[in-house]
Image (cartoon, rainbow, N blue to C red; front, side):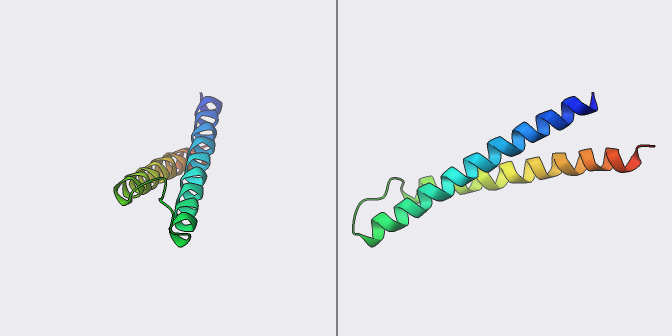
Length: 76
């Protein structure tokens, strides 16, 4: 049971970190595009929505890791 929860948490961490990295790369590309007077890939509203999604996902996985850690701390 515990190993399944750890495996699920690790999969979530991988997905979220990969997704967040891609969002940051898109943001960086858009900054370069704007510096070169080119159109960005995403508008400000899309950037804001994606940033909020990344923040929420990171908070959720952090809370899950904390809960799982508490179970280890309480284990015999």
